[in-house]
Image (cartoon, rainbow, N blue to C red; front, side, top):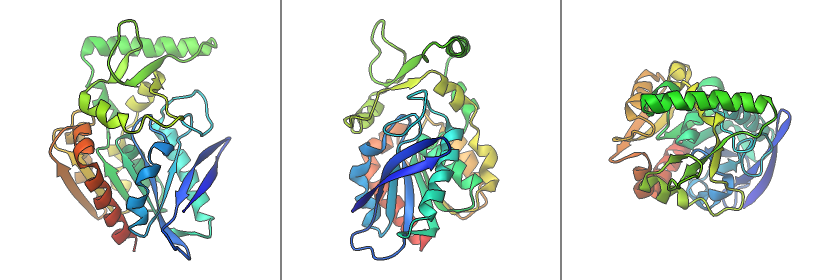
Length: 294
């Protein structure tokens, strides 16, 4: 059973769905779930049952600028803004009769895991947080680029800002796939990543592209600085060989969290553990959230 959601978030509306456990008769604990960079809500509806089978409601919605939600420029990623929007989602859910406002959790993969941690650090209404392979340092993300390439990237970001100030459309990148001669730059080209993302690329609202300025916004996000502000219980899932969201950064943040916490590491690379252990991770985190919220 699900309900369509239109969520006011300042000047725009966010859109998604709320799934409730079968036979729910009163207010239930609810998890707000997010996928990785550029993902859309309708690509995740099929795993709602992992949460509802555990007695939880679950919300999937499109971040601003993506999918069916409002916002311009399209396909622009901004972790800070997404976190502020998530707080609007918490407010909206808290006003519903079928949601227990004292038991709202956040769950996320990769970029979604970053946003979940940001929200838990900035909003005390978050009752629990499950963060899976989160990138937690924008500065560290910059170091993933070779120095010469980074110089060119910074120059391209500045040129794009100037172009947009003159009314030109934003420069866009391809999110994942093979690089093609003369085509746009591609962020992720590893085969495990492409295989995992391909599972969620069929929805009509999905676009395999991001604005170049999204990288600028990602580079400025430093979640670790907020670790001590998290008061809700935390379940962190990491890939022990992760270089996409460097695992050492996430381990460092985990050490600094003073709230009740649990850490699980799977063997492999960022997308590798999602590709090979996804159902297990979903089941494990949903069970932990259900137990923690109760």
